[in-house]
Image 1 (cartoon, one colour):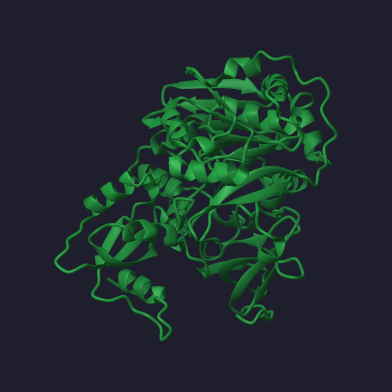
Image 2 (image 1 turned 180 degrees about the horizontal axis):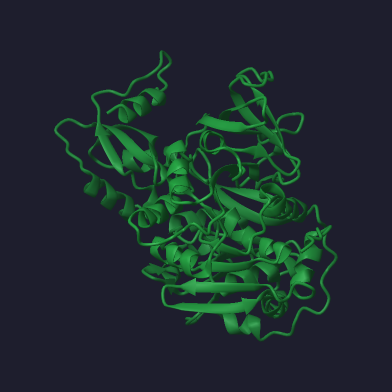
Length: 516
């Protein structure tokens, strides 16, 4: 099938209701599978767009969403684009503290969420947000309590009659990622940058292989969760969408549906490979597993190869989703040891600590430019985000060799990437420091094949005080912080190593832990 690249994101969404309406999405849970076409989703989205307009959502208004991977999340995504509004997805595991921070920064006029999923109570999250931070209207899927707007009210509205004229350079997405200070940062993307990212993932052009069946396992609220419906339409991909991550279910789907491609974090990949190595499942139909979102170890690539899975490393971030991607047909050593080749017209320069560009093969901070680059952060001046000549400093340290292979080797920024989630070491330190037993604390990321990294807290105790992981976890939960931010290792130290100016030498703590 010849791929016709749309010139605008508006054109791509229109295809969902026209030429490509037959493309199937299948929403899967542990006990059910619900199949819909993108044409059906498009029709429902037009009604929801009309309903949003009746709720006062105008072009440029912000609509926040905290939903799991369910059919309605795609309907909302398309509807917000049709209404020329701005979607603000919120990570499903965010608690009241993080959701409040997003509301305070984004100021959405409407929030859409669900009653609960498994043991997570989204109604309690919404109720715990201070009144002054809550959006004026909250739409509740499933059972609708008093004071909330029912989802049925949106779906039963008259379809949006005439779509407004869309500015492809205007912001249409604000997606939140943890910054080094712990306060989520709103990453702004335009229609143009998102279309570039969708087209950047031309699996066939990059890997000489048509994608027949794609598995979507990453959570809503991340850039990957936003992109998969756009790619499904663009590449005519039958797409299986898991409502939440379950390695056993993922393996079962790969084997029964002959999945050929997926995006995974190391956490996803390790869970699946463990089941394959135990002889429970055959994953060899996966021609391409793009693995990123956290540091990918060379040993993980080799494990996948032994199970017949074509795993390639990928490098990107919310601000610039796909910078580099490996090629499954490259030799194993190349796939295992490097993060791939630059994609989609992206440009990279590496600079030293003085901002001078370094030659090929030398270490430097990675700076980016490209068509899928974000517009900037919400409420942050551009001169605090980009260099004077328009480059985005990532804070990552890497090397670009003569073959054009990019390899990320370290990070300058104080971020831990656990299972694809950005965790702020500063935020975790702030919570640990409030425990009555703690005198001083420093948190670092330590390598982990399953999660990429885990948080390890080095603690100086107060005199005669004691502390263990269970007590620390209880302290975090009582503070209302998302569970994945709880340190998973606890080390006690008499004094934190410091520089002459008093700055903690975190690299020494990392070395101490990894050599233990």
